[in-house]
Image 1 (cartoon, rainbow, N blue to C red):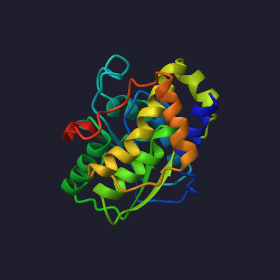
Image 2: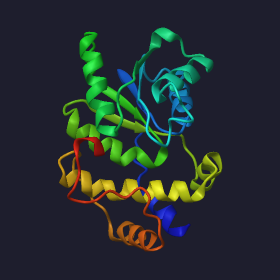
Image 3: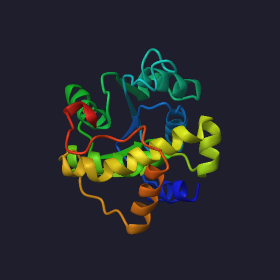
Length: 218
């Protein structure tokens, strides 16, 4: 757990909240993304939300109608009006979350200058690096529900799954940068050694094969 905590801390961006033109809620297995997005909307941080996400093998049973659709439904339950929400329902990876959201907004004549990216807590750094690469010029701030690692594991109910995801997202920092999917992010030695120990301990379910990435891998 000490090594998992190191990775958890690395992925926190610690951006100061500020008002932006839109929010982009990234689809995943974690409904807390939708709930945090609703909280920020009620604070007046942005007037428009785009929930983005189709399904992945890890979400199809939980969100059978698609991640974005279920996120939108949860936000509405929490008081966000329907006219403040758009859904992008085709994205199957983080890169597509941004490229397809941008395509959707362009088609509606909406050209935001700033965006709040809302994700799982440990996805912040990778989401930021990906958006900076694929949507250059837009002013970005990252946000996620403020949770301790132990509390997040309790909310998901599966420690091994969370640690596998942490390890996978850490590897993707340099793999996706090398593949041209994201900007470079420094990885300090403490974080890299914690990553190596967790890999050696068998947390490898979410690793990707370096050097053999296709467009669907992001």
